[in-house]
Image (cartoon, rainbow, N blue to C red):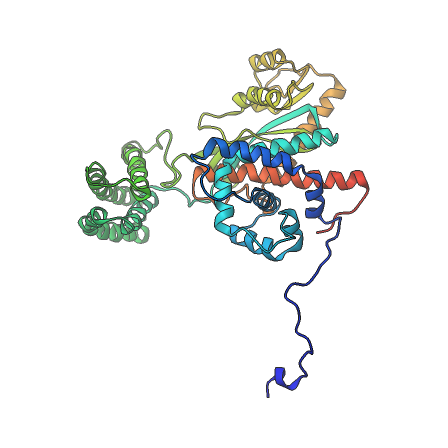
Length: 452
């Protein structure tokens, strides 16, 4: 007899819909009460109006989807995990406004909604949270400190053979999804692909000296150039129908147009070309020289971070390849004025943004106490009390950036496959950090302890 049949069965079967009570001090329950959902829906509706081509179809469950985005922002999780939590976790259902029904958004619906919002939508939601913090006097916009940081992308270490291998692999996988023309291209390049795979394996196993490695990279680049040329002829054909497959191949072809000359330049000069491609699938990513011990270079995007007194963060988004501290020192004040309507009274920045011209321009924009750390023998014009406050604020932004890069948020090495989604994950991480801080400040104001 089994253990189940030896014991007496229950007289009544257990219900699969048990009634549960939620703690009013649970973090997600408090968050639901503190946020103005009508205003959040108005923000999302404005973003949808600018991106949708037609309003045909069923009306979306915006209240539930906004709750799902906020839930994902406050803790790192995948879209499938978010669906499972919203379906079975009581406080998450309460946050999404789904306690009175059985419907749950699936992971594809949540992903499509996040892509629709993009980094701009996440930034708009974060601006609302900043406004709430200022209204409750949790944040003081009269004190601003800015800095830059690197957002690393989840890509392998870039090298020439790895990038060309990524091109061949992506080309083969994409052509399998295409029609007759692309399958014919795959058949004509089959021999070159086989030779490339064999040469690449020999390179990784036996190329030990620099001369041998350079000769192997030269041979591999010539094979990749032949495949790239055949792909270009196919893309120029008139009988190729436009689709997401052909768009992907066109993006690969355009990236290889830039990468192959960079490889030849490196083989001939031994120097890395300016604007070096570091990812086949995200060609907009770039290398960021940081000079850290054990990590001199980081690969991803460079962000400008703004922090107001109280610990709340804001960012316009990642900068371009030419983005640097001196530019950001000026742009930070401009962004602060556009968000809060007036310049800060105290402004702090590290010595990377210092120049006499920068200090003059910052004062012209209405900042009374400019705390940009001087370089060399230049002396600060601040009084001892303000100088001490500025140094404290500059130290605090380092802690805030460190908290942003914790594993709890999806800022550092996000699980995204495109540059646009990497930026979206960055803005969502900032939103999540501010939301958690807002709820902690609300609990401190009410002298209550949060649970969950």
